[in-house]
Amino acid sequence: ETGVTQSPTHLIKTRGQQVTLRCSSQSGHNTVSWYQQALGQGPQFIFQYYREEENGRGNFPPRFSGLQFPNYSSELNVNALELDDSALYLCASSRRDSSKNIQYFGAGTRLSVL
Amino acid sequence: DQQVKQNSPSLSVQEGRISILNCDYTNSMFDYFLWYKKYPAEGPTFLISISSIKDKNEDGRFTVFLNKSAKHLSLHIVPSQPGDSAVYFCAASANFGNEKLTFGTGTRLTIIP
Image 1 (tube, rainbow over the protein chains, first blue to last red):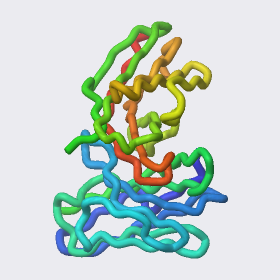
Image 2: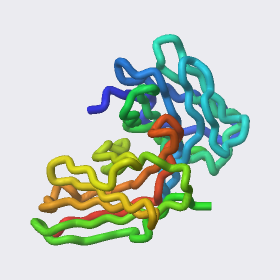
Image 3: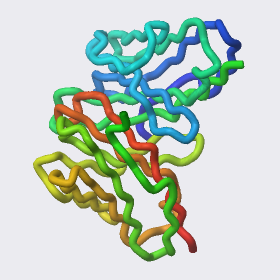
């Protein structure tokens, strides 16, 4: 049990729609990172938020956006959904500036785009 | 450009024997390496990590070895148990873990009773 919770667990959307995924970070953590995991692949970094600011972004288009709130929880928003957006979306929380910065993952949100 | 590679998609090991999972990386900026274990329908679970200032780190049955000159790391599990059956991901980061994680594609480990 990592203390990182994600909602919803499963989601079905149609192409062109918009989706919001949510993540509550572990107590004491100040950083949230989002990853996309396609079937048979390792997780791919989308972006990271530290103290409510984006702190690094992977190779994802601008229709992927995020937010971090003062309580360090976070949202991932995806606009204009495409079929290829179907994947497991993982959130990880960590404490930046610690000597041993380990990212702890939630169970993920499985998004299906039809 | 795959900067972290796990060349063995699957591995089967007899219960009680040693499991060795391998990982190679290409980016010299990586200085922190982690192993995660993943069961179906769950998120990756952190197992063990190693900083580039060390060449070995142990935690119970798990040991990670880092060979910086070869840009290679390995995870040893001794003795292997049926509950170890899962997909194992190697991940790497720069700035001692403060940057994004770059993952390999995973190795599915099956422990045979």
